[in-house]
Length: 601
Image (tube, rainbow, N blue to C red; front, side, top):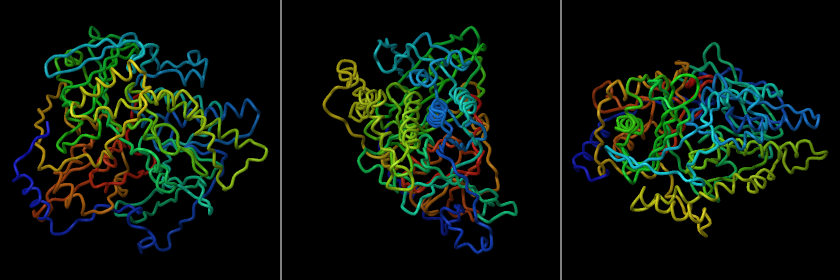
């Protein structure tokens, strides 16, 4: 609960912040400190090799791979030559993919009607739903009637990383060129302002921002059309929003952070195909969130469990990671895990804005697909099927324009507004329209309870046909209250059996980055963390980050504090970029191949 704290706390925080006489340099990245002004870069060869494709796709997730597959399917059907290149920052396809996940197979069946015969051993049909409202020591079990968003009849439990890897194999068989380990770091433009393609990141830059002896420039990939499917809060998409004013006529995007673990459990407790969801404890009624617990069916007793917290929470002392660890001690959750062993951990931000937060999707030379613009059905807790369908519709629109005998375009990069039109005529738009008011309905005095009542009346009965569209309450970054208005949350210590500390959790993610490179968590102003975030909000980045990237440590002089960024811990969840109350953190890509190494998350 958020209540008033002692006024001396605020005074102490301000004194601590003011005690720093000088601001140590934290950010050395060239996006903040241009190399043109750095004498260490004089005489360094900066020319890039350029290659040409018909279509370039950024991001090897469900949307990007579905788009690539559909493009090659169409090209092969019509005997057209079409070069499709896909770049992915992870070292392997699927290594940065994390989701629950229950897959609704509608888009997959459209993409591959024979998918069951293609050896998708990663999908297992669910057999039972359970939805609960948790209190501290008990729960109320609800029946999920057919037609309600969270009913999973006909869906499949998957480990999305494995599923994405399978999609990658299908894409390669069709002739798509996949380039894992190459991070797209820059959008390239024609002289007329249209998108020309992307550039991959440079390698061989030292932590202090200077060139190493092994420095190599990235390469350019040019295309008639570039599809951006970076996933939630993509750093190139952020640039495109500003460049083409794509968010002019939509609500701000709102997000959540999802944390996930995989456990092996006692076989006697294993119920393959069982799907459990809950809301409530340990979160209060005004903090949006919930949990999932899926019993996998892979021949061994595995469960995937996770906790989602809406990033519009207000108390800067809240730690999503520690709420997750506390949830596992609930008397209706702990028995499943007791005697088991945790084998994997990860985290990722997800879009929750829904229909009203979708930006303009097309611009000269490019399109936005998948979770980059945000097609997640929030009450269903599903976005894979909608992301895949958006990629497929984009592919069909792009293919028609590229292969037209005389593709008319006012710009060098093709503008394909037909994609947006097709999407608005598809089942994706109808599905998102029906649930558009469920997430913002939780912004009321009664919070969770008010939202559940609204959902029961206007979705269960009217199926989203109410003649109004609710708005969100602004950006997630603007929702935090000052520390002086809040009480610190006392979390129990991890017991090492059900709950764990942060660093041992990150170790299970396989995260690794080249140590001698500029931190990719860049700060627009190195003085802001101590001067504002610590002084006003008591350093919330050290709690909302699920990987221990940010910590405030004493200055070497002993007089004041400084922010330390442990960039090597970063799991690429993007939460810091979203929730930073000063909007001073800008997440950019590290060297390609760095980051988590999820194995079927």
